[in-house]
Length: 167
Image: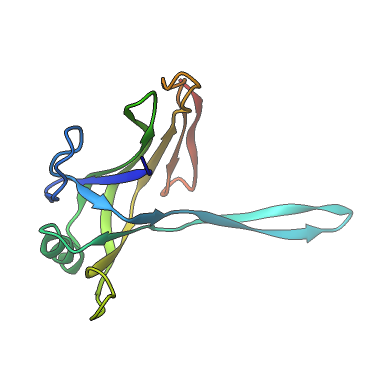
């Protein structure tokens, strides 16, 4: 089983028929990050500049969610919660090992693309800005069970991590 990613956005229904993620948006890819500029200081070391967080970007095939995603972006509608879930094979069964929860979010960019011939299905690329992000990763043990979660929360307005650690 290849890895799978699902996105659940309050008020927007996708086409997933998966038992655990029914009605969610199936993603082809996603990305997220941030950067801190470093500057050399007198006397040796470096100092970190301000952290710049990036919007979460996701790519999916055009679906029944597409018109609603477009309208949410065009209107600037606030999304109270969006949850991205990553899944991979555990002990002969799929396990959700990654959860990224965005709160106080807004879709900041929406773009569709397609190609004729063997270009594949039309795609959409969406950027999602947020007020807070919570990342949780659970390692998959050798027996296929999930290990203890490791998590971090970052509040954009505070410009700093608000919670880091293990449960």
